Every structure is written in structure tokens, then in C-alpha cells.
Length: 229
Image (cartoon, rainbow, N blue to C red; front, side, top):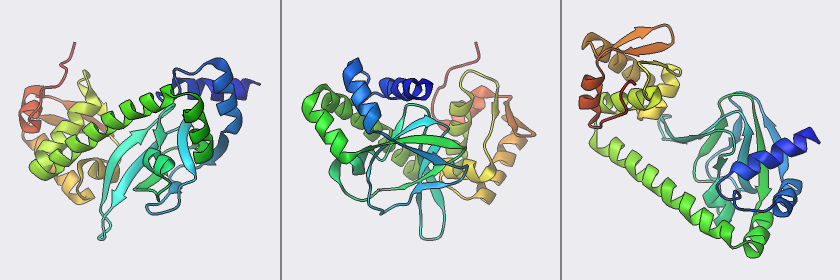
């Protein structure tokens, strides 16, 4: 019973289903399939047939594209009560990117037929889907602009500021993961971190970046970010 209640709470926090009543959420929970993934396990690869919508119940999943030469570019990361594979879940097409669990994760798979039934019965789900898709388009448009118009130094400065938020220090992912977030390769990400350190903007510690000159990082990134409170 505890697990069922937990799964219902996960779905109730998802923006597609937040407006549903208790009966609808209970029906949705009963139709969701639980899938377990170990750290680094692939949930799906680009071009596969897609069975439906995946909602993260616990853990974290990154969605990314891979180029022909093996370079990876992260599109976004999904954590608890967030979903992946929305496009393919609704248009019945193949997956448009790769998805990988970055830590042990539990996902709920809601099949396309279940989604279609719910949207017919509860039109408010469709309105919520449109809002979420619009926000995702804006995020991807911003990412595309960053990759095409800004160099690696400015992109990395922006990533560090975003990860840090108002804090003066940030626990950074691995160099490979950081490179994927920036849209470059591991070696370039490492050299760029060292460049930022030599400029006095940051200090590198074991697994952590300490921001020494926030104004400098903001100047490099081209954006203003929340300052330290």
C-alpha cells in the first residue's frame, strides 16, 4: 500500500496530471508499469519504437543526442515527477534522443493507449501537455542558440552559474558529463575549466568549483544570474 501511495503522489506532482482527481489518479497509477534501471543503464536509444510516457519515480535520467563521431550533447535531465519521451508518446513515432539513468532509478511507464484514454476523459490533461511542450520548446531554442552563437568558455561559465544558483560553490559532475552539458568533448571542457581558474574566476577543488569572481563569469556567459544572498 505504501508503494502504491508513493507512486500516486509521484504522478500527482507531474504537470500533466496535477489537476486530476483522486479517482483518475488511482486509475492512472494502476495502468502504470514500474521499470527499474541501474546507474548508467540506457532507458532507450534514439530511433527505437516508443511504448509510452516515462515518469521518473526516483533517481535521475538524462536525455541526450549523440553525433556520428561519438560526441554527446545533453538536452535535459529529468528527476522525480518529471517525464521523458513525451513527443514519441503522443505521436507514436520513434524516440528522438537517447535516455540514460545517471543513478539507480525507478520509472513509471504510461502506455500510449492509457494516455489517449485519459486525455479523452479529462481534456485538462491536453491543456497541461501544451503548456509543458511550449516550455520545452523554449528551453531547446535557448540551448540551440547557446550552441550556435556562443563559444565553449561562455557556455561553460553559464553552466557553472546555473548549477551553483545563489551559492558560491558547486559540486560539478564528471568531466564527461560536464562536456555533454556544454556541447563539447571532455578534453576541451577540462582545458576550459583550467582557463577559467587561471583567469581568477573560479578555483578548482576536488569535485567542486568555487566561484571567486561571479561578475566575471556573468560577463563571460552573457547573462546575469542570482547573486549570493
